[in-house]
Image 1 (tube, rainbow, N blue to C red):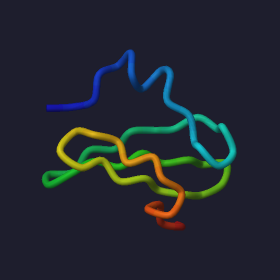
Image 2: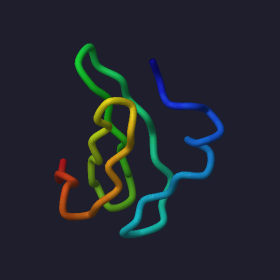
Image 3: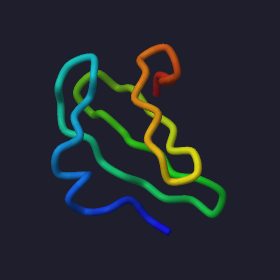
Length: 57
């Protein structure tokens, strides 16, 4: 299952309020902010939008 398109339209990076891109892998997904270069995990189709949980790329 993927994230709902309407949800993706309203989600923004909690750090910089930038646009997020959704990327799905076999096991889980990620939300990527190009502006501040953070990757937020998506666990069980639920975005984890905590800055402390994000990883730099």
